[in-house]
Image (cartoon, rainbow, N blue to C red; front, side, top):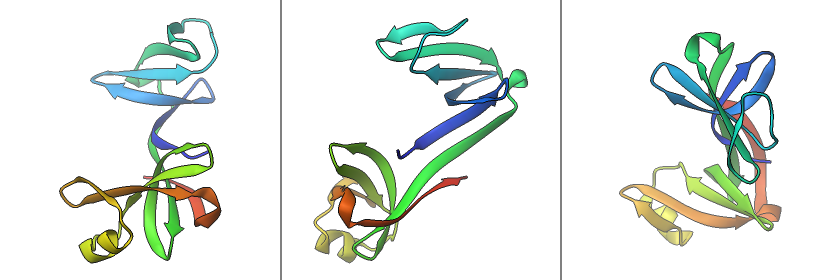
Length: 121
């Protein structure tokens, strides 16, 4: 599983999270006390930031074809990756999509990716 986003520890458990001013939105796939369903398989609970034990940004990184990437998501044996090497000629040679100015993304087969690891930033 690859993650790219906020996580929060609340009452000893880690949740996907989203900071919102003085509150933190906590997400989980199953129903739970105080969690409201926002769509099937997605439940949210808003708690004051002061109750959060830890808030961090988690990012999954990897190497693909010898170049550094961030993993943004995954689907059906493929990883959505964003190039972090900062070199336009490399991104162009890899046929990555120009997502924004200086931001290049593409789909990498899971079997071609190495050094897959999660980092807290």
